[in-house]
Image 1 (cartoon, rainbow, N blue to C red):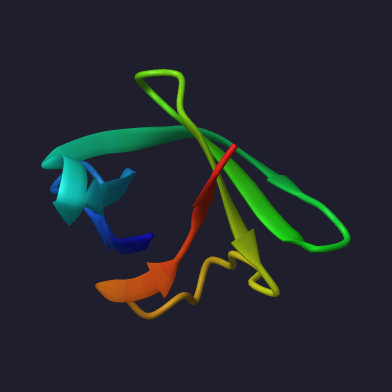
Image 2 (image 1 turned 90 degrees about the horizontal axis):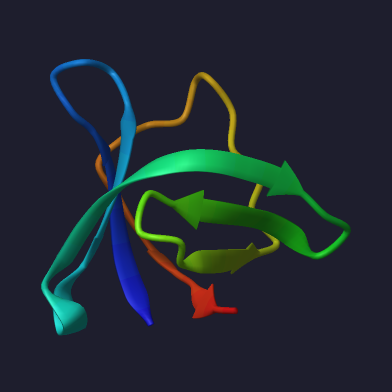
Length: 68
């Protein structure tokens, strides 16, 4: 599914899923061999294949994610 990443005014990373009309804060992110798994405030886990988060990430950005 397509998701949009951005930062809110407090500087926290936010994920927006348009098809679900869902906007949640990222509470945890884990690097794996395949990419990155993030946990949202509502408990969802999303996997971003072949993508590594960094502090110099240019936002907003639309990426492909898989719900675990």
